[in-house]
Image (cartoon, rainbow, N blue to C red):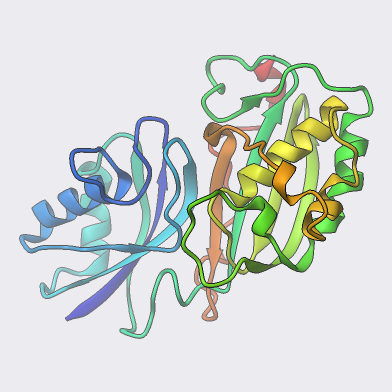
Length: 269
């Protein structure tokens, strides 16, 4: 058996999430179907992260095992023409059998895009319209955000029903950047809980609106307002942009945005 890994990007709008589900169109199901058609053998892929319905990716990593001897480069070229239009395979390469897309990963990086002004329909599927925010919204959000950096129990930011052994995670970096009218949250961690980033983004939006105090995130992490946390930002603003591995795989790619050209972000007005 040979193990191959690839970097995948997709528009999650019309997918029912990443993970294969009976009777539903998912990223895993669509990709496995294309691979099986090309390779002539059953394929089961494993991913670095099982993104929810509506969530996008520009740096998802998956691996799978095959018996056939098709060169990785040839498979990569074939996949450029044989995948669904919402999917794009950026790179395919052979890897060691010990590599696992999920368990070998050392970090994942997500971006969440929000905008107080109603976005253009050309970018609206990737940006969450927050509605009116305070003039000092970004400053308030930036004041709140450092609380999540470090190793904490993020149980307050995990959706109910998640099956995990521990809710402790380590956030390496969390930053807010203004890109014209768009506010971008970028957060990198060893791993994430179910809807963790969307919960953090949702609380930040409420802080920017003036409905929450900037101390809210710190209080939640100390367990002082855990039962009151119920805001989860919409899925469409979230993008998995990179997964890092000990051998450097993934780190050589620039962090990509869901649109190919964000140089003129005034177009979202």
